[in-house]
Image (cartoon, rainbow over all chains, first blue to last red; front, side, top):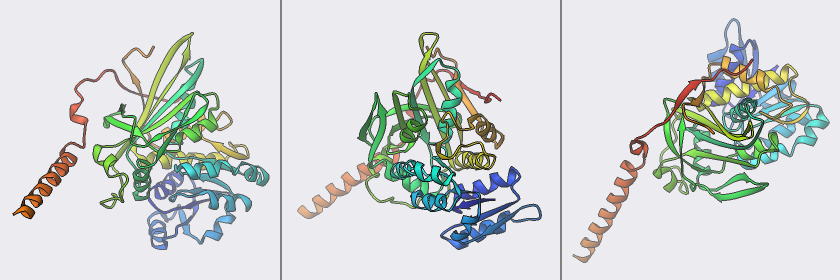
Length: 328
Length: 45
């Protein structure tokens, strides 16, 4: 049995993905019972059933996908202690750190906690692991993300532009003001080029956990001048129910045939679709026994990355690689 | 009169800021060159 906590945009897409992959019964919980019941009515039918249940009923499941807004650490801890594996979609820096600290609890409970099962982090880790096979050794990963999922995600990205970005730089954590470090990043069509800036996003922390040999990890998010100026103010207008087309771009640098080599890969889709495809693939892999117990991040060398990436592609996520120029 | 001039000054500055934010927020049109392209990536089985 799989449970989903969060009936927002990502949660509803996770339910949809799990139903499409053959799950016949899911438990769903949300702090807003109306949203949960709306989802139940939408997805329950002759072949499938979604039950809106109180949070305590989630202890009866095998794995729970936390698809609501951060923080997830407290809920993850309670679920692990109750013997339930957890897949977290959180991309908040403090929350990701708190989740990574739950390794001892997860191992003691002999359960799995998958941290950062969304687009960035999540899909970024899968793509890095897939691209790493083309290298003799990789030492740099640079991630860029464009767009947001639901309103909670939009608010978190708004806050991320006003704080301190964090990156891994030659063996140390490097903090820089968010909104600095402009770089023009080319995303897969139809997004194209966007100015991207440093932001307080969790990808470096999660990727460093899964790829300890990397010397440099950075993450940037697209923003306009208006986004950067208003980042330190409350959101002036309510966020959209869904942030339109988004994209993820992952640049991997390393060594191949004793020369520097660079590969770029990405995906353009709604961010909620990317995140839910990864979260659903992770939940299925946990059920199938693909993950060992303890804290796992997507892309680490002990995770079933090939299976998950195949599941993500099967879910309709179109991956693209950048070609046409010399990457040496 | 002095108050009126100050009001006009504030309004003009505010209009300029709003105009820059409204029409100068996107840098997409400034990009004129592009190299390479995107090809569908199929993950190895």
